Length: 185
Image 1 (cartoon, one colour):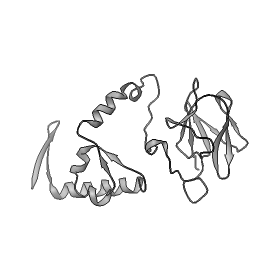
Image 2 (tube, one colour):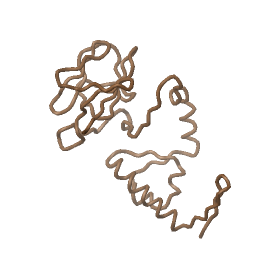
Image 3 (cartoon, helix red, strand yellow):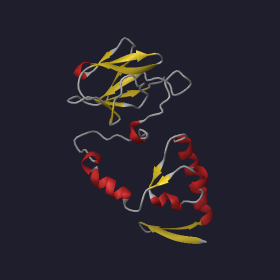
Image 4 (cartoon, rainbow, N blue to C red):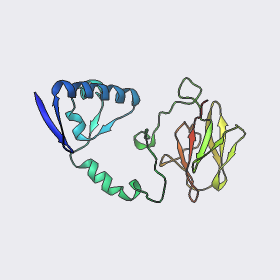
């Protein structure tokens, strides 16, 4: 079967075969990105063909759950006074994170610390952060040490000894957020 969709005066005819091809490519890519992690999706995602085959462990939200969550977090979702960040990875549920420790065959280690658009090289001798916190080398990765106060990584309370990975954002009260990044030539 086919359907016609009109957007801004442009009319397109889409068949089930087109939707299946697009859904297959999308679901394959999502499955690669979230392998081994729990996936929560809007109920409408369940309407895509082949979702069950590619993402058998997906949990679908109820019809109004996404809107309810957006309203509950509205002030945090839109921060007009800050720069725009595109988030490509979220921490796992409950703050439990199955991050690969850099150097163990997982993701490559961070090489720089990004703060306010400026990247500082991580030289391994310990990077001083606000509040007395220090970013230290731990094996092939990084950890936070010292400091006082509530420290958050990716909006989750930091657990001492937890390895940090590329993309982790460190939030220290009263200081700008800093993000671990990898710069390659």
